[in-house]
Image (tube, rainbow, N blue to C red; front, side, top):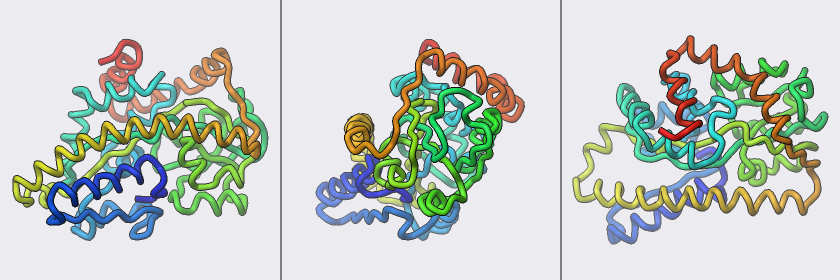
Length: 301
């Protein structure tokens, strides 16, 4: 993993490892490597393909260079709440996206939460589209994220997660978008001045394995792993929500970040400015797929 072990993903991976060891009497060992200790962003997919690692949990955005349809999860303001995001990932569209992964010999096992992304920067509070003009934002590799910031008049710079802290310190970028958990555990609050609570984008993780590896496991072992992962997924999603709220309170009490809360009118103004992002993605992957996300956000799939 590229994130810290004290995030919801890190804790869930550790819980999965402990439960598997217990339930197989030590026959199966799961080793967890957080904070890019083994591979950086962009290196881990090749490692999974060649068998150097057996499981990953990358952000959905990182799949988009190989599978453009996964950019659906990057659409700004597509999910008004976590329940809506879950209904998409656990529904028919999520299953179709999982099926596409097998073309590259990946097998999707679960979807985990990080939470909703917020904006941080070093220049000013961000309330209106004009406030984003000229800022340099670090992003994950995704055309939708690039389009999102360009629509707001900002510059988007793709960058591995483990390089972000130093880039903020030395001024390579002025700003970034992330969940409260990642902002807190990566100490971005030590390098940024302003936090805008926008909930503008969902950040989720896909628990992946190598298809051939998984199918080669003894059936009884595979069942224990699948049952345990299903249980841990429910636990992880609950922890992600709890940690998000708890760590926001901690950031508020610490007082290093000036925190801005958007009014409903300000959110709507930002949403309107970002409509072109939907139009461009529709041209890339098809209007029907984008419309399914829109319908899901309005009334559930």
